[in-house]
Image (tube, rainbow, N blue to C red; front, side, top):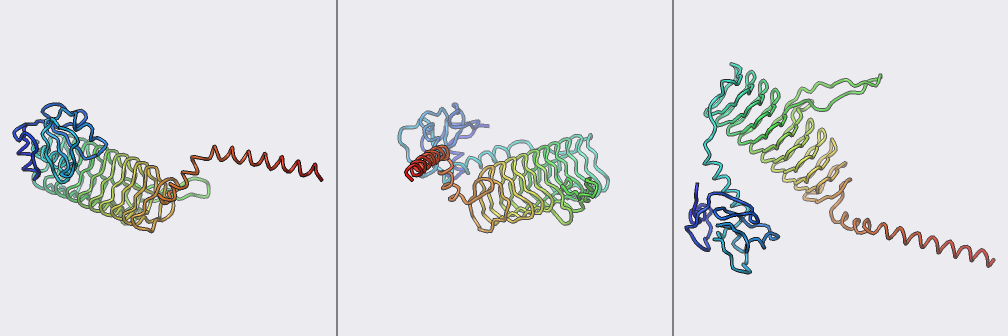
Length: 350
């Protein structure tokens, strides 16, 4: 489907600078774009590509100051990144939606499905499951007994949702993710073995949550593991039993949160972070990649680096000394040598 610069600008409420009737039929990175594609510029470090790109149209921020002439037609918008995302949403919405129920699926008679639901091949939907309107469940997924899935939610291929899990509206769960698996609960015995502790709780995922591929969210031992509204979890993330994650918190890939930890709202966690069990993290906390948190963080909006995680400013100061350790070691050795020489001379003069 081709779109003109004018139609795109009208949709985004932007301003065309250049040829309003130039058309595009695809999108591309600004450094790789060819004729007939649309690109965007929001990160200043890519500014140099604006003057050499072959893209037909480029979205830029209204306040961006041009340094040279640009071949492409520009569309100035309030926020180029957000506007590009809106265009991608538009393109996706124009795709023909999947609908219907595959004859190769298995749906228990007691399950109830809303309107315009898609169920792919080899999907199993258990007893007393409730599924809302416009839900899409792709091939090889499994929905356990008594689970609830809200309207407009997408379950991609191979997702396993255990019994009694509750998933809200407008959620997206990517391929291979497991929701409601047993928490890691074992009681040590006198003979050195471990007795499994039954996990009888569930998982509650509120509205507008997105969970990446191959993540695992464990059911609670008792009560619920809760992922609150607007949370975004990347691929390969482990959320343990009885964890609570506050609204609009985002977490990059390969992170893990141990049992019964309570995470505040609007937190931002980098990749491979680790959070110990039974601690709390305040609202707005930011953790750098590979940060390790072993104690509660009580200060809102704090930024922490490292493992064990410490305040970013303190980390930066300490890192200055860390980089100088080899030189400092040599300096200390030299001082020790001089002290030893002076001590020897002093003993000879006695």
